Length: 411
Image (cartoon, rainbow, N blue to C red):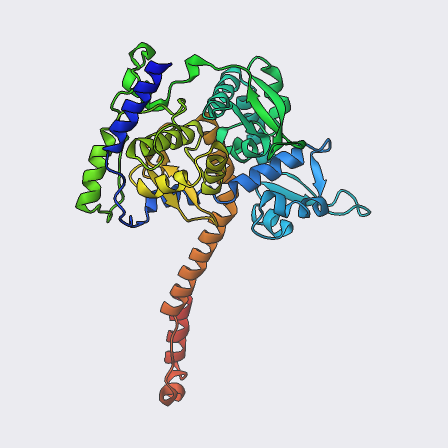
């Protein structure tokens, strides 16, 4: 025990000599490519949530009135009826009979995509992958547990099935259990949490460590000096003293996100590198390598990071990008994208782009119709024949009138 205390004191002493982050305001510069990656998924989460809710009904359809009540829950940007009519190749509004109200069901094309998506969810390879992703998320917590309401915020980004508790977790009792946790120490006010039954050493290796190990986990060395991949958008420039700080900070020892490093000085550079490692691993666990910043900050509060997540996102624009598109703020892992395309595409992302295609069919046809009307209007202007008042009488005598009519027919 005394030896451990001495080692900890020596480590803390070394950290105190590290420079802390320079108090310089980092300018936010928009990245059109990553903004496009976020924008193309506009309303996708809402569409998939509604799709799952409709298919959960025995009749595979729901009254329009019941869907209208779900607007706050699914964060719909407009009235439910308007939202459904916006995507006619995904949702079909119909009346089962004259005596019944309007109902909503999926179109044939959307239902086909759903069935293919379900094949992925039911495959053993995906189930094993989803379980390990979720287990790693729980292992980022020192208590190895998270409230279900926080996991619900990440289930879309983690690629979990709609009813993941019954469809997935119940088949893995050796991994997970649902437990109660008292709020503010009060056992009478419990919230349900998902807990990892036991620590999994084979999963406690971060993506950064796996890369350095070159596929052989025996090569993983704790405390190695691992730097993060950095990339900046055009027009972004770090001042010299910040660039020097980043260079030195990259050379600090890498502390695994699966280690509990809360003993580090929270204002030190080493603690910030560990915080960035946790954020990097979190985003890497997500199938789209991005999520709403509100989800990230809520998780950070629960894990005990306070405002450190927010500071790290702002301090390191070469690692993380904050997009302000589609009515929210989204955190994107830069290295996971080449322009607006994922470098490594998860099978579920392929299915999601099938939904996006259906969502955009009508918009594309409307765009083409507007373009055709615009071109038609331009052609009409080109073939119009203005007539001067002073020449009216002469123009419509004899051959002149026939000549004018001939030109009109040719056009």
